[in-house]
Image (tube, rainbow, N blue to C red; front, side):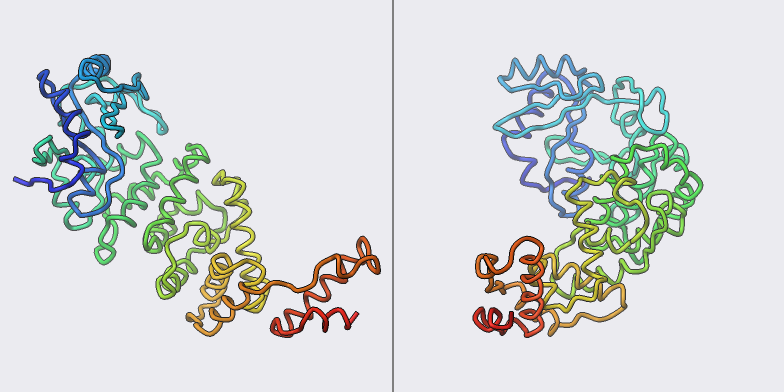
Length: 385
């Protein structure tokens, strides 16, 4: 018997919601990410419970127990119960009645076996009761322990139910898969066969899933597999995944935390922002990093123009694209440049220069100052006019 050892399992919120259900004879099983992550020692952020109690019953039981209940998705069986300020999503066991590749029509069920059968991967169909005893109706534990992301039942059927599962397959491999073992062959083949289905998804869902994938510690093997399976080309027009593994390696050498936007920039491609429905800030940042990486600026000027964090991201992107190693001396120059402040202000040139002439003069002096290694003084620069 496998038993969970997790701080969240014994906290008052989790136990209060379980007790609310169990004391009235209903099942209460934690499920999905909280169970999966606790079993492998990964952080747990959200708590999800499955139960045989219908959502109206959950609402009534929460009220009787003095807990706040919010009908966040009551039509689909989900009620958020808040105990001691912590939200716990309680969802009635469900089974799919009909699917169209984007969403499912569900009916309520009475057992964890029925509930598990509608989930995507075996490692996500792990349940734990209030005592921490793990229930594994579909043999997900062995897959979790060896890092195998495996679809439940027939992979093609699971994918046709929701084509987003194609992208989730690659993301979950990046997060939980064994990189040496590679991706599950049956799952990969099904993703390749149904790759065209990705186009049925909204751009928001695709973009959200891609950014989550690229935020993984090392998404490069999964992204390479996406390309080989013909999935990446359905997400981004004309991508080049060859730069990403080099960029990830340089990031790790430099001690840079995973950041999906520079990694997205490394993939290149056309019309990326609209294809992924990126936020305007993310789209501008991607474009800015690509422009800065390939415009030939000296590392010191990169630091001065973009600051330490953005300048470093652009520099590493450049090095990765060129297949160059980490350059500690260049990074130090970048940091030095980031700390510089141009000593001349517009007021110093007025009224001699105005309008367009003023802007041109300032740019010229700034260029001379940068070329000097930031050594020329204000007085020296002004004398040069």
